[in-house]
Image (cartoon, rainbow, N blue to C red; front, side, top):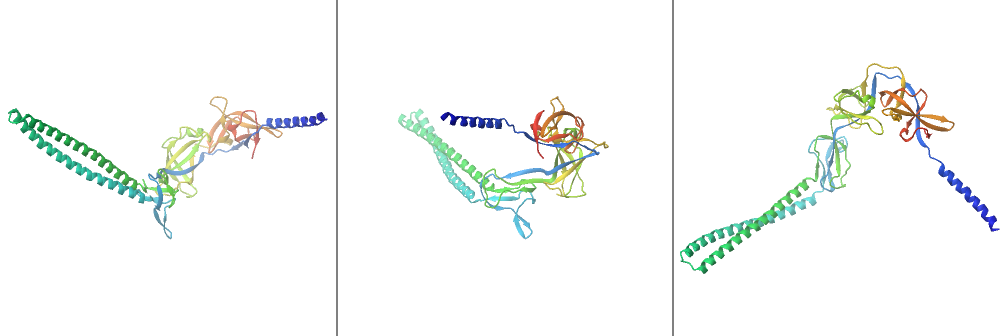
Length: 398
């Protein structure tokens, strides 16, 4: 009877164990996105999207901590208001003030200590003067006693008394000088404390280190800040930078000092000339683009940080339609100094990524032309290509 009850339980356990084993063996497929290879007629110019950023930005931070009691006031519609993003402020403007009462108390205490030390120093100097005067008189008396002793006109006891008096006077003068020097050091330390306290009091005012536009103000009246906390971010917008990325095929045709123009939809019909001031020495590991910075004069403050601009690079002539792929589809090949893509092969519901070497052409914005290795209509992995290997089954997502 017991055996008949045990057998079904064992069978059920074996079945469940097999289920768990099957579930364990199920692999999670890597999710990728793919797009068909298309032909694009490449024109004689390439446009890149650029971000407008300040030429220089500074995080203006507090050197002392405390509660914010005041922010710089700007005249606006309906009266004065606290400074905010977009306000232009000259050098030296008091941007914010930390509560000063505690720092004033420290200044007063330091001044009181300095006053006491100064008075003690004056007394010590007077004691030194008195001790030195007594020493000079004692030296004169001893000289006279020495002459009388040598002429046998003074007893030995009187001579020794004069000599002892001289030694006492010397010791007293040395002690007075030592004490005066000690008081002098204390007075100097007290003076330093006053300076430090006054500097700390001055640092309760957060001042603009340059002419600039407020880019950020993460504080309010009543905020508690600590030393090093950023109160305001200022940017120099008299000149701005247009930062954009280009592929390796295009970066070789750019050079420092090269003149380019930018245009923004916010100011239609206006071209802003600039010069290339920076070309990144290495490409970004994710986008595979080289960052380029274009310095653009902005004396009229028309261009503002955060605007999106278009940089146009003119090429010689135009070409016939050619296959074009996004840069995210390009991966390093197993062959040295070559590139490749992953083409999707579909078998029923299963998709397999196959690596194919390609020969690249010129850049077209954030895409690049492919001279050899792909055919029109083939589906190529455009997202997730750095996560798969040759022959790996993948999951295609929209």
